[in-house]
Length: 222
Image (cartoon, rainbow, N blue to C red; front, side):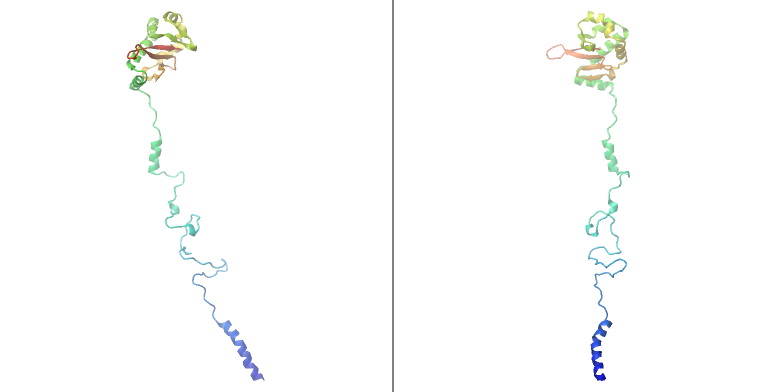
């Protein structure tokens, strides 16, 4: 009986012994070995960078990095850095030039364009200034057109009224403005030629229907 039971036990144990001694199946070719400290291994899809490659530091996933995308070092420089020559040229071109003061020729050209006959305006300016500075009241009257506009919207109707109110019209402040004014620096607009800060205005009037002849006079003293 004992000889009969031993082969039966060996026959039953053989499959278990063969399974324990057989080698384990190799891992798939596209799967990295598992590291207990790093968790389960992940597959490396075809076309993605391998663990030894440099991954862009743009914050994008490898899927978002495509051919032709600019490298991180090609980004625009941070503000405060050196500007490019093109940017400097644009900034220079956009900077307006400093204004320059008008010269004598500019004043005459402006009068010719806006009022006409700059030479006549200059002659009346010089004669009026000389008469006021010299205290020649008769000469001052010669350069004035009546009715004359004075301060506060009032008017002087003729030479007699002007002479009677001469000191009230040509006050020290007005005479000072007339004396300090240079013809090169007068302001010109459609109201005429201005002396000082508006104390005196010169303007012309037409002497015929075609306005081919004009007469320039002092029209306002205030």
